[in-house]
Length: 225
Length: 296
Image (cartoon, rainbow over all chains, first blue to last red; front, side):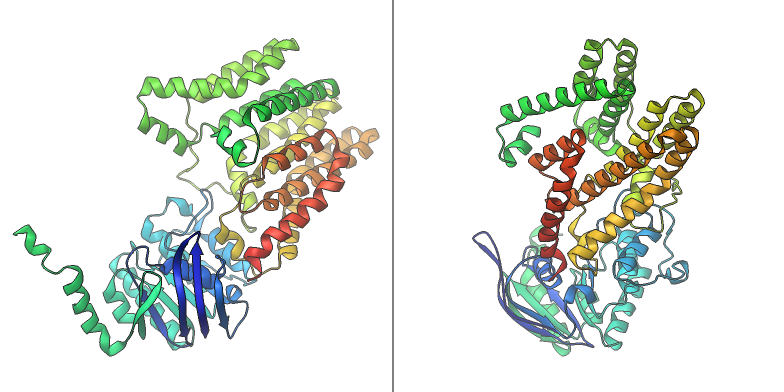
């Protein structure tokens, strides 16, 4: 469980997150949606402890960062570190023994190659593999489906479901709504640094239609196709 | 950009350039008075600096922005500017052959772009330990045969100073592995207190540098048995500088080591006793900096 109370984050005079209150429970998968710049990544960085903030973030396992698997939108890889070395680094940092890494290479990545030579999707899959091997209690997955192929997309969807089933607290963000629909128990809509809506599973379909109507409207019609 | 960095660190650029020139001259005079290997150190240091400018991605970007003749002109100018102070000092001291070599290699390096992304993975003895040594070794692997060759030549020719120089090079090369601050994720991910984190980093640096440094010391110790004490002292000094470098990396984290701190560290190269003060100071500052990211 992660409980956020009155979380406010300012960059100079600009308030990026404004008095957020939310509880992310164990065994559930939460989705965060919002336009670019809505504050999703900042929220994740605050929970992870990578940003200072006002308010409180508490959890049943503290400090959160030591139990958190954080997947960044664009994971950074040093230019001459192999996939295997990256996984080993992330596990050693948490005191986890890696064992036979090749046996757990579910995405069939070329782990002996430099990670910096991987495609966007492969980088994402490597970062996910490493985060999963850390044996965390909490997971924040920022855009886990970015750039991955259909096959891997299905695997990641299953992994996220499994995280929920195994009583982990999982928070994900994605610009692909169908992936959130398939994996989340609840979705929060973040707008201008505040949660404006909280949706339960049965409301996802209606919300998707609503979004289509609101965001696309008759813009396509203007093309006169 | 250098001027901007100086301003960011609260320095008047003109004053800083004057100070840096003075320090360069002071260090050069000291080096040339102390060791006969100075021209070779000069050659290597200068080529290491110019080699950094040949990094593939940087050069690809330059090629993308400029026409081929302009690109070549820019690269030759860059390398000449970096090599110029070294060249000038070598000429003043009458070392014309190393100066000629330096000029030649500087221009040659300007025409090359060194691939940093190889299509094959270079094996490294350090791949089990994260991550500075595996990356650093892959970036500088070509220097180690040269260093070990110098050690061998010093043993065969009975030139102790050359042997000392090769040992010095080992630590100089290894210290370059700790010059850039890590992205915050690579520090954040550690489940350690700041003190413990620094201990892990320093211990790893000392142990892994021993893999390349100790063979040189042992070989030299066998050949120059009367100089064993001096060798051990130099080894300890190497460890001390390396410790200072590792701690210095985090003393201004997440920023690079600030200019004043770099100058202080540079002064310690001339006056090693200064490390006795600088290492604890860097340690305290590193702990304070790391607390922000490691203790939330």
